[in-house]
Length: 270
Image (cartoon, rainbow, N blue to C red):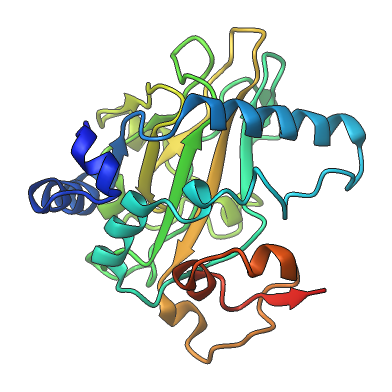
């Protein structure tokens, strides 16, 4: 969906667009907010990530700027949608992840082979497998493409509405069961889409959606940020030892109260 200049200026979706976003997330399983982040920020993160990868060590920590830029870890429009669907006590963890696909990327297959196309999977299964209806979302991932996502560079294939499918797992003894592998035959009978979008867009997705990475036919690495948000009941007891990584005090002190609430189960390190 397109976000107006007024909404970007206010860092808030208007009531009509918020309703559309919530309905789309609930019914389709994802919503895309197109080009809401500056391209220069995407370039800065890509550059820092490449520097980190070239160092082969922790010389460039993910617990620093630009990775912890508030526009990334506290994206107001994405948070507005998440709060409307999971309440305001959800939480997340740092550092967040990156998903990348290169020209030579290969994925394992269930039969032990290799393929340039990833298996169809969910990032998270149904809360109660075998229950005949899908329950409300309790795990959401926010993806941010650092480059334009195109069919040529392997943008994700996704099955709209698949978050509501309650089919049992293919085989509970399957070594790939942990990845919530979905039926290729079942998927072939359902419509899918490619997540074509410009860099700086933000996609808010129910983690139960069926999807897969596709082959990258370009020389540019296709990279996106992945930040997972969980409903409060996933840590009902408020265990502050649930995440091993600590947030540096100098970064914590720069975070707003809302960000500190989202990452409240992390320790703060000197």
